[in-house]
Length: 187
Image (cartoon, rainbow, N blue to C red; front, side):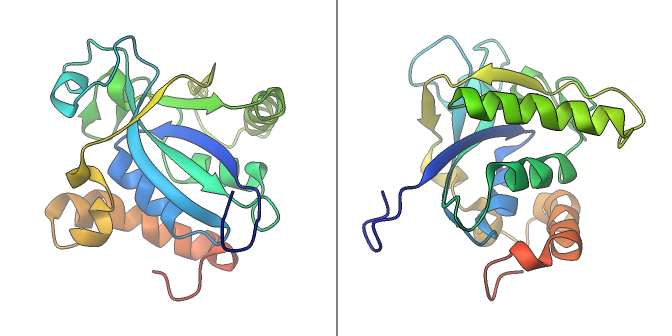
């Protein structure tokens, strides 16, 4: 619940490569109240970044998004998710390679599962991508927030080469294609 206006917030959980990228994209959307970078989908409790990087825990870098569905729908979040990462590369996003960088949607309700399945089916039918989509759709699993230095990474470190080379183009794409969905004053 949003305590300021008693709006019930919904939750979406996406993994689309490095969580710094995914977090930066979704933080800018009107209707998104919170984005938390973390780990999910694995088989140990309370994993740490150093463990995730080995690729042996089964976890993926992802984000948990609290959003107001009266301002932005789950389908709109899916559209932005698929537009801002490559859902056709297995266990890889650019130079980030390993199962921890896989493309995956963790649904929090049967409705979200159906919406995600239908959305992927539409993308495939319309041949939006040249190769098949490999994004997995899985039931929500425990989500563990990442260590503090991983939160708000892009906003705090825009001068870093990774941010300029990898994240800036995603933000530019977001601004170009989804400008009406952005919060006022965000870039």
